[in-house]
Length: 510
Image 1 (cartoon, rainbow, N blue to C red):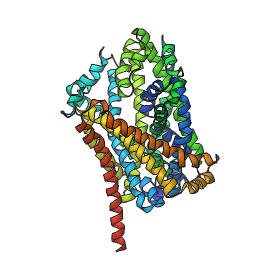
Image 2 (tube, rainbow, N blue to C red; image 1 turned 120 degrees about the vertical axis):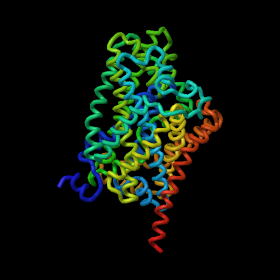
Image 3 (cartoon, rainbow, N blue to C red; image 1 turned 180 degrees about the horizontal axis):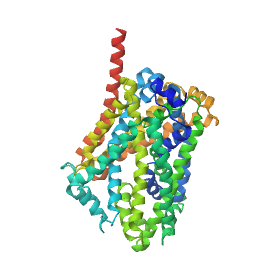
Image 4 (cartoon, rainbow, N blue to C red; image 1 turned 60 degrees about the vertical axis):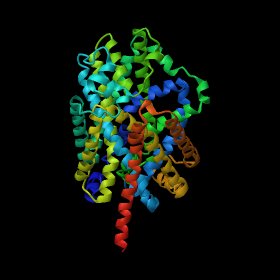
């Protein structure tokens, strides 16, 4: 009987192969942020010199946490809530907190996938016109007050031109999740990840062949070693690896719980971590090569055309670049937005899987009802981001869930495992028993000292920034209700779900 057949008979999904798991884990780590966030972070934080704190952060935080999450899921054969409950009965809430943060991120992540689909279509004939900012903010999203923060509370109606591609994206994500781990997530990763690599290489080759490409690459990789003395650069490095490696989402705990008993955990973590770093590096080359071309074509400085990251880079700056290409403009547009979409699909699926695993374990559901509930609820919430005020709410929720949801969840997880439960030695023994690469003192001491110190510093830094400078000049009412509101909602929801189990146990004892 195969591993998948055994898993089916016991009611728990299992990966069909080690390669399938690795590709799915890579697909989770490699997402939209690798293409539109990493190049900008490198540029803003010392250029080539940023690679030093970046790889230090990988070695002392990203890989140690990734290995810890793999080991937690593999050892306890469960999602985050049950795994943390096994460590300390009163800490199940932490698992639910991670699950709910991931759930709320999924509600807007799929919306961005819809944008990518729409822009694949708009690429034909360059339908966004010459003023790409006005098209994205006004014609496409219909953002209230033309994107002015003063229109924050002008929700408006649904944007049907946005809703249609978002529905298509949800249908695709739902279909993949409905088919399960081996036949859905794994098969999708085996198809999309190689295709994504091909598209990325096509972008890089096309980018570096353009006139002015070297100008962009010089700006990106010329090292400013003086930046290494800036604490903010180191915080940016740890923030980048933290967000780009899918840690503290409870994703890797759920994914590792589907692995067979004999699986090399540490080697898997190194493969995924280094693959993610390589992808980001290639993406940075491709992005800044074409930014260099745009600078030369418009007779501007690279620092001017590279002055934005995130959504603005993808949906405003890149359409401008595509407009100015000497040929095959539409093809390049389809390739770029297609690559964004493929990178996002595998990540979106992974972000939703922890919730599905947790709900199945808590309420003893079959996979289909669990997928129906999680996808249905997430799709319903996502309608908020398809309104005229949707861009404001998406931007605010993303800011606060990342800075105060993920980082704090990660800090709490490390404190629980390393300091409260003192489980690091036990987890290291478990990982070493099944892994070729043995964990040494660096792993334990990184999690005990370096990681909590940096995550704690990031939390204080983010909090100070948020209190002293209103994000994007949004009204305080919007930042409190939408921003701090989503963070509070995840925490209250986590405690409530924890109390549900606690009350049930007390009833059984009585």
